[in-house]
Length: 180
Image 1: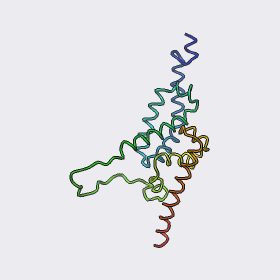
Image 2 (image 1 turned 90 degrees about the vertical axis):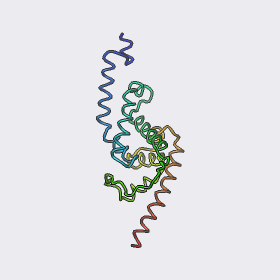
Image 3 (image 1 turned 45 degrees about the vertical axis):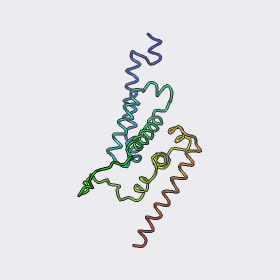
């Protein structure tokens, strides 16, 4: 039994794993929610994304610690992948038989009219993830590559493309405001 407990299987090690996971969630939750918000652009979708990923991480906690070693990087990568997968599933058009007479009123986003947030929303999900990890979370290219399981070259190219897009969108926005 001690050999199993030393490996984290059964006994008090499993209780320790749950305590470790609870501690991880407590310390990582604010950062994961901010990252989720930056990915989705919506606090409610961000909370759903974080909850779904933490459920999966919690179910595999011992494996995450053993294989990956960095649960925060694993959680960020899982969030980026889950967001991309959700975007792919929901980006299809929904055809309706009649055009609605009125626009449905939704909850207003505090950053809705902020040019940078609007520009971020125009980026593809993978580019948005790279930009958020680099400039919002302050990760290095190597850390981003590890978190997203891509090469450092991919991180550099995605960052370059995203920055070019953001510059173009923001330049257009600022030129429009400058003439008013």
